[in-house]
Structures are given as structure tokens and as C-alpha cells.
Length: 288
Ligand SMILES: [Zn+2]
Image 1 (cartoon, rainbow, N blue to C red):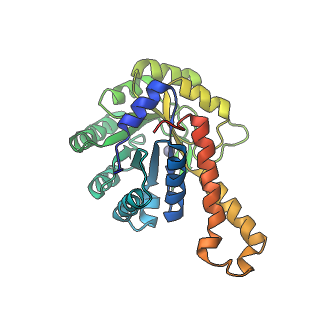
Image 2: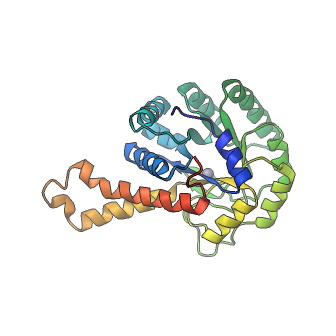
Image 3: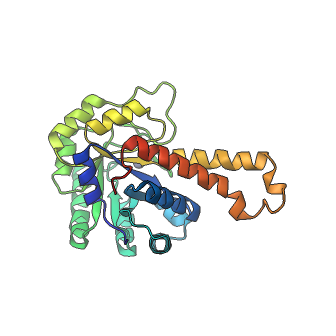
């Protein structure tokens, strides 16, 4: 199945009170592991690509070529969206041109008027091409690929303003943070999420920084209208731990253990296990 935009899968998720995972990709192993797991579990999925990861993979066209090739050669039949994560205005345009099916424009660092103007322009473009678009209000805390957010809590009225422009999905800061959560983290602001949900109605809401949020908070967030959850760091930690174990056990020194197809296999399996765990938690299994 060819790439699809994220609109249908998120509308269904919102109505069905579950969430679709966005899993960020970094290379072939990452992408293959996520697609294999989605197909096995019959779950829709969103592949996230940050601008930094796009550069790392040689550019957006390479990413589109790799993903499209895999969809065909792995016989993937579940809905898959290829989505730019935390895109700049220029990055969003470049991904649209390269063949992404979905983009996020992160204008949260602009004054709200400028965020609105730029979001509007990109909505016109994505609507014309049948792509989905995510906007963000209230910067999400922590650091992602050099983009540092202050961890603001979004103003529900500003969320409503951006939602009304016609975006497909809306990310709102509710105390969530990218990367690992500090010990003294105060938790998600469910009062704010409830307020946003009341004002934005059927708009699918997006929770960034899914790594390390306790399962009960994830479930509560889904019950309050979150239908897309971004997972990035958790796959990285799982991959690194499995690779470390392989090397520390000296397996790369045994026989042909140095073969990259063997060396990277435990990490790839660890990503699959993480993705499976998240899809089960989010409730997207068998929702393809
Ligand atoms: Zn994010």
C-alpha cells in the first residue's frame, strides 16, 4: 500500500478512543523494524522524521525512496504515513516536494500571529495536495535535535485559534518534555488538556515526548482526546542497550559476529519490542 496521510487514521483513533504511535526513524534498520511490527500487529503507524534525521539519511528524497521501496517490497498493507517532525517552514515545503504524506510545522517559537500566518500558508498547500499537517502551540520542553523547548503549557484559546485554521492535528504543550523525564517532573496538566479538548472538539490532539510518561497517564491522555503519541528516545535507548550488551558480551568477536547484519540485529529486535509495547499501550493493535 502506498503512503497515506494521517487524517483518516487519526480521525478513526479519536472516535475509537485509542492513539496511533509516531515512531521516529534514523536509518534502514529503524524503519524496517517499525514497519515489520506495524504489519505484524495490524496497526496503523506514523513514521516521524526530524530535520536532523532527514539530513543524516542524505535528505528527504532518500527517505521517501527508502520508505516507498520498503512498503512495496515488504508487502506492507497497514496504513503508513511519512511525517516531518518539528518542521521549519522551509523544511515543511521541502518535505512536501520530496513526497512526504504529512508534515508538522512547528511555529511555536513565533509570536502567535506569525505562527498563524505561516500555518495558514502551509495548510493551503497541504490541502491542495491531500496531505495532513500538524501544528504546535506552546513549546514542548526539553531538547530534540538541537531544538530546545521551554516546556510551556499551551493557552487553550490559542489552541482553538490554530485548530480553526484547518490543521489535521494539533500538538499542545501540557507539561510534556522531549527525552527522558527528570525525577522531579510534575506530570501532565490534565486540566489544560481537558480545556483544550473542550474547545477543539473532534481535532486529534498530539502528545509529544512519549518516552517515560507512565502508562496510566498515557491512558488518561487518550481518554481526554489525545490520538497521536510521539515516541523517539525510547527506541534509541532500547537500541543502544541491546547493542551495548552484544558488544560487552564479546559477540562481535565470535565467528562472523562483526557482520553488520548480526551486529545490528539485537538493536533492531529491541526497537521492535519497544514499538510493540507502545502499540499495545496506545490501543492501536488490529486497528489497521
Ligand atoms: Zn516533539
